[in-house]
Image 1: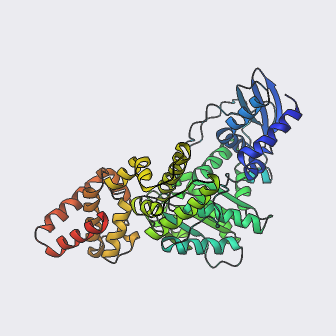
Image 2 (image 1 turned 90 degrees about the vertical axis):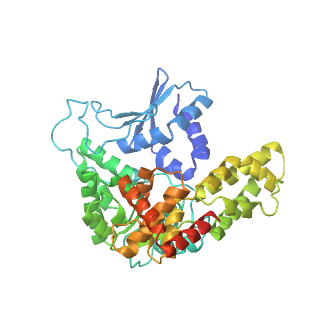
Image 3 (image 1 turned 180 degrees about the horizontal axis):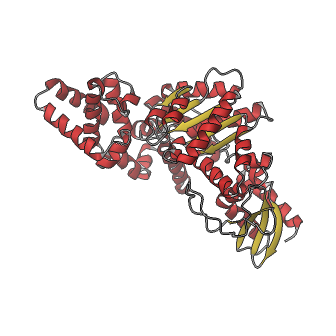
Length: 469
């Protein structure tokens, strides 16, 4: 394969992976050699090579094949001394990394600490950003209004009175969308800003790689050089002592330099089991925003925006009045399920050449609608019970044992057991990681009180009506 061929392949890859992903991940690759069906490329860092192998390796191999080059596998190696090739193959995908660094397979590696390398733009490369996740495509409603406003304030780049911004909520409520939107907006407004977005798992992976390669000082310099650090799903570092230690020091260093930090998780800092108290305390010093489950109006707005997009993709395809309202009412689990249902509906109607009617929607989405009918989400139960008893949702799943909190929590546990198909351990995990025996005790307590407490019985009847209606 020639450099000219690789140049043509790169042009095709821009179309396939998008310009942003191309500039971040593909452009730094350098073609090295093609031998026995294996195409080899050099990469700036181990992390870069591993990420490309996982996410774009197959794309590269296919485009090489389309260009007439017979390639069975692609490999990526850091451009270092020949004795340390550090190859990363695209297939198979490497296994998940343990926090404790494994012994190096290269016995000849010197014991001395390597000279720290400067933090260059290639090493700073963020995880790929989804081009769809911008502020323009984020539908704002009452459940996410505060989170959207706070994310906008950070993205505008002016003085911000809170640091970090901590976003938390259940699956499919828009945390990652807002994180990507912030990164997109900052990069557009200030192209020279050093914005680093990655998941907590990727932070841990980079840390482990730095330990293995004896480049911990380079790691520290890299993460302390950014203008904005964004870490998604921070709950995944819980219980990882060494990673938490480094994250704590990185956090402090950036805050001391007035650098902005944005964090997301599936629950509030104080409710993440296994997260060190000092880290939880520092995270709570900023603005903590809960993204609530979607309401009917927000779900309908999301569907209307998505339907407008699909009308451009499927010209001439009609959707009958009332279909979107029907879906917004029936599919309440999360936004991903909702959008997935509409995607399937438009694709199916296009293939069979029919108008999207209520009858077609019921037939095409029968399994999703049955799943929605069969259960109420635990998150919805927790929210309704918290609203009914006028307590905070965070207290519902938190550690407080005051009677004013403990009794509503037991009511929510009881309703979760009655109205969902979740097991006791699963319910326990949704209630702040509680043991299944705690859930059993809560359910039994409510069953006993129902027989003697008429007010509690009335509350349960009303709550069931709200949840099942």
